[in-house]
Amino acid sequence: MNRPKHTEFTFPTHIDDYPTGPQYKAGYLPETNAGWRTFRPVVDHDACVYCLRCYLLCPDGTIIKDSGQIKIDMDYCKGCGVCAHECPKDAIEMVKEQL
Amino acid sequence: MTNLVDIPKVNAKNMTEKEFFYGHKACAGCGGSVAVRLALKVLGERTYTALPAGCMSAVGFIYPQMAFNTNAIITTFPGAASMASGIAAGAKALGQKDVKTVVFAGDGGTADIGFQALSGMIDRNDDVLYICYDNEAYMNTGIQKSGLTPYGTKTTTTPAGKNIPGTVTHKKNLFEIIAAHDIAYAATASIGYPQDFLNKVNKAKHTKGATFIHVYASCPTGWGTPTETSIEIAKDAVDCGLIFLAEFEDGEYKLNRNPKEFASVKDYLKKQGRFKHMTDEDIQCVIENRDRKWARMRKQWL
Image (tube, rainbow over all chains, first blue to last red; front, side, top):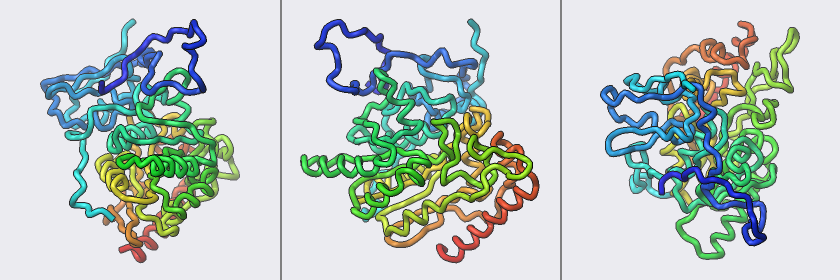
């Protein structure tokens, strides 16, 4: 598994479910960050040359390499716009999120 | 020192697909999280991560959320390097070979509060990579001045007014102080030059003993910049000469980037809310300090 997935947090019901200390297992994500977003990145795959600059510079690591194309994990994208701003081909556009 | 030619290069094309810092709660456009994410991608899964109090520990460990996919622990504020020393010693005692211990500390946790432990760690030459992501103030607690805050910065503890232009001290020469310990490997980097940063982390990974990387990481919240310009502003800082890219190894300094002409300091400063109040005299003071520093570096390091 390359990226941890969103997992629903269930409150412990039995004493055995409680952790033994203030620690938790790695990559446990009970919440998504999608609600932070005002603008959403939209990739124009024809203009994209797969230089992977966005992949390198995404602060959240949400750009996924997917067999020669880039995909974005919308659960954890915060819409900061670094990918669109840094793209040398302007292949990523920030579009306002609609409710 | 490992021969550099033998180290496989890491770049965007061949780096691991795995994310070791994912789903964290850092502000949108956070530069520090770029530094942490890229460094962990170079270091790989078998990494022990120690973080003192600071942004990256505050955004990564919100119980029960756990954004780090490596072994990670929050340390005391002044004791990050000490705890990393202990982890490295423990790993050695257990006979673990292909592991690396890394510290991600902010500028306050490195240059001010954690400095004593860091100095001890380098002195003992423990097998730890210490990465300082420098966003030039205590951002996590609400933008207070640190030892690495540059001249003229407006912070909550050094407000700008009629009499004082915000911070009146210059940035501490942290890199030179670390190098003066005769450390195995030390470097400065910027997230504006990501490939350079990856190479330096890679080099530190393959160096035995204490290593140190000072990476310049932007902070849109504290600096008053739009979130999308985080990387651009970190690049501008290098281009205008306020941040330099250098390495220290085998007792020698190496200047990685020695431009003939610098970009405009004023343009760099005026992009940021924290420098908006600066007058032309204040900017002249910044430029003079930069030129003094570069003259010294060029004379002694080249």
